[in-house]
Image (cartoon, rainbow, N blue to C red):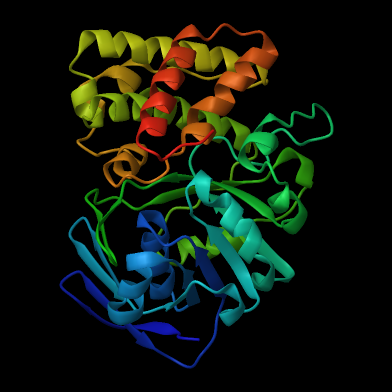
Amino acid sequence: MTFVKLIRNVENSFCFRKNGNEEMKVCIFGAGAIGGFLAAYLSKADNEVSLIARGSNLEAYKEKGIKLYHGDRFVQAFPFATNDSQEIGTVDLVFVTVKAPGLLDVGKKIRPLLGNETKVVFAMNGIPWWYGLDSSRENKIAKDTLDPSGILHREVTSQRIVGCVVDCPAFVDAPGVIISKRNSQGIFTLGLPKFSGTRSLEAVSKSLFDAGLQAPVVENFEQAVWNKLIVNLSRSPLAVLTGVNEMELAYDDEITEITKEMILEAAQVADAHGIKLELDWDRLLKADYRSEHRSSMLQDWDGKRPMEIDAILKVVCLFAKKAGVRSPTMNRVLSLLTMKARAAGIYDG
């Protein structure tokens, strides 16, 4: 396995090369924009980093490593890249950064990575596949929708699961090349499912902090999920339907009204789950608080890849139905989005 170490730091540039020493073994499962971003920075902190990738990204990582342009910084790393988890073996920490449609592949390949103490951090958008599986109010909607075969439920036990909400706008500019235009650190908010008991996340948080990233640990992880979800849910589907970025969406009054209706409906669903959302309407609706970033879902549409429709919108609509919450705007947007995706051959839900 390839191990990488920082060997120079000149004018905000970083380059990593092999080293025989070992610190924490980390595998990034799903080396797209966020996976590549994490791999570059975790390599900077002298971890033994490996990537599970596929297609053109895999070939680029093998041949040229990762090139990350983050604000005014340049980071280059050369981690071990493969599509076969058996070539990696057991690790201390797995970051799952695939999109929700890729979870089945994770379930099929993750076992060789898991040692007795391995933690699995799901750094993904939307409702997590394990959401609602606590004994106090069991709700299998997320699992049945996002892990219908049950393979993740079988392979990744509750004591391994770590939740992660990502705040790190980034995109793949070319195979192996990641761009994040925002100068600030990436924020990876960590927390535990309610059903997994009390465990320390210090080692996970420290691995990110030592790499120069923010990794706060929150007690109520579901709150963090919903805080980000209402943003993704009310913008990303509309971005795909219109083809414009987040800032451009805010310039249209009718689109803004649809956005507001979706937020209000989602907030009622969250309330039915015991989550009280504080809605800052200026930050949620005004262009002044948005960027020209093309959302992750819109990037997937641009690339004709399966989108996170189920995790970001469908599951919430199903939650609403189960809770008796009216959600006409979310339902209509979901219908438009799924029809568009089916017509493009990238959705079969």
